[in-house]
Amino acid sequence: AVSMWSHNFRPDYLRLHEFLVGALHARRLLALTATATRPTVGSVCNILKIQTIVRCDRSFTLPELLAEPNQPRVQRGNLTMDVRCVGDEFAQERELIKILRDEEHVKESVVVYVWKRATADILARKLRTLVRGGVRSYHGSMVPEQRRAVQDAFMTDMTRVVVATMAFGMGLDKPNIRTVVHFGLPKSIENYIQETGRCSRDGEKGRCISLVTNKDYKAMRWMESGGGGNSKQSGLIRRLLGMLLREGETGPQKRYELSHGAEAFVREEAEVANGANVELNKPCYVAFEEAEMAKVLNCPADELHSALAHFAYRAKGHVRLFSKFPTKLKLRFFGRTEVSDLAERIPLLGRVLPLTKKNQGVYTIELAKALAELGGPPGWLSNALWQVAGREFAIEKADYGYMVLIIRQADEQQIQAWAEEISGINTRARQNSIEKLDAAFIALSRSAEAGGKEAGKEGTGNGDKEAERTSVVHQTLNDLIDAYFATTHDPSAVVAGDPEERKRRLYQALGEEYKSRSGGAAATGSAAPGSQPGAGGGGAMAQEERQAIERDAVFSLTARLVMSPDWPSIPSDDPMAVAHVATQFLAGIGSMVLPAAKWRGHRGWGAFPPFG
Image (cartoon, rainbow, N blue to C red; front, side, top):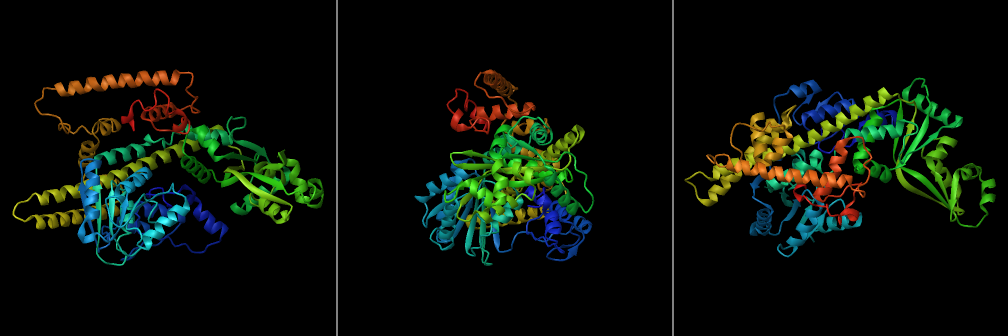
């Protein structure tokens, strides 16, 4: 999670070294991982400033590791891996039921991984009537009590099968899970290793089976490419930085200039952090609620968080970011003592009350406003009030969001440079996640293909054929996983064998969608999959006419949509932002600007479901 090249990057971790060494004065750092590619190892070493890498077989400096030709086996030796490419979701379900009903393994614990939360619930409901031993779903949208109940039932063998997203497994140490099934694709090869790592942790034999369809791959790739709204638009970054750094910019943010006392505290704290004198330039606090800002920018909350974390990391010396910050404190007095008497008796309360707004007996403090006036670190005011509250009043933290301390103002050139850098990072990160998904798809499909060729050979019985097929799949996948972890660049091409083979495989799976996204790069000179040789081009012409008619219909509907009086103003100067919202709308997918609950009754909603 420390490295932006890993499969589950957390932007806040960019500041981890600063916190561990600066705040906790750590003298040594040890980073542990079982699933890091070499680019990820390099990134972790750079972020945490680590010089020595210890692998299971020897130690390295970073340059030595990147140049090392050997790669130890990544997957555990007691696990047998199998891949089965199936035609559609119905065949996928039939194959899963067959696996779960296998008499040889009918009493063993099983985890079935899916990539969507809705799929976990739907599939678990279907399987309950078809599979013995109990089936339950598990995903991140469930409340903690539900998740805990599912995990407890699974750990105590009250439930045999759990259908789960990748949220299930972190910290799970049930030693006798004998089967892990991927009902679809893992998001990356790293995810595959982590999730199959739940299997047979006691060292006994275990099996890991992947059921792969092109449809799942296409949908996942569309989402990773920004189709679900997670688009990292450059316009979003520019607008966000403008609201934070420019005075007078409209938006949900509130700006408070620091008093002389608060300014002195900020200067002292900044000089301690930097070890040198710090020049302040119109210091202020900017605060906003997370939900409000996400709605204005039409982006998911995690995308907003990512942009802010990247900005704070790159704008050190200019800003400090306080995440998960309660923008308001609410004071409720119990009536034992008059509020005015308490204000005289408790000096802190006397300073705070003039900064509050009273509504129906509740005194609300804009926390950033109070800190700008009174000074002190962000957490001190709520803690200090709690210490003096006694039995006289209660304190509630409310409307969580972010507070940004602007230490020095930035000019337009600097703002633009930050916006371009962060947008570029987000673009590269999105491309990285697509490449990881491509590598997982290619590795699994190549392994299944190799097994299919082995099964097609003559001269062996059916039982022997299946054993030989599984053996070839297992060996091929092991080799591709090791190659993936050994490479320092272009993992999907390495797993495919070469860039041209990657193009061929991706075009075969994605069709025209891959061709349009890659600017025609997939045109390899061979006929498109499914085309008829010698057809004289008639089929292609009909397809072109059909696509032209559909394109005109989409353009017409989109134009009517965005010009209609009920179409909201999209808060972005980036045309791609409007395009994303319109495409989601036509696909029947809700967004922050056009939530499904409000807009699904509109005549244009879901008019082109294939966009989804």
